[in-house]
Length: 99
Image (cartoon, rainbow, N blue to C red):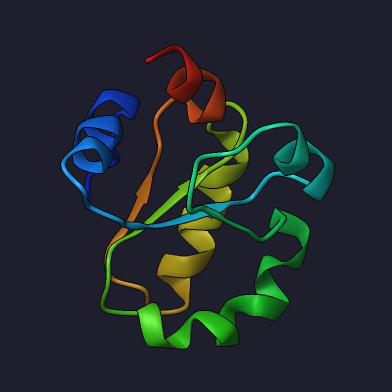
């Protein structure tokens, strides 16, 4: 699955869509600002939380961090665990705020 641009995500949200968004930044980063409706699972804890996401394996999941690096790792981890529709938010939260 191809990654997603901040503009595309904002358009979908404006149209009333509520995709599953996972913020892999640290908790303190998420508390400073986050995408409405996102779920915070810091990258360091993601391997132990994968089982909790089992019911999302066939659904679209959008992962993001501050700039795109950690979320690329999160995407790879989820794909490795059998998730089929994982997309990285290009440019991360910084780009989303500016879009």
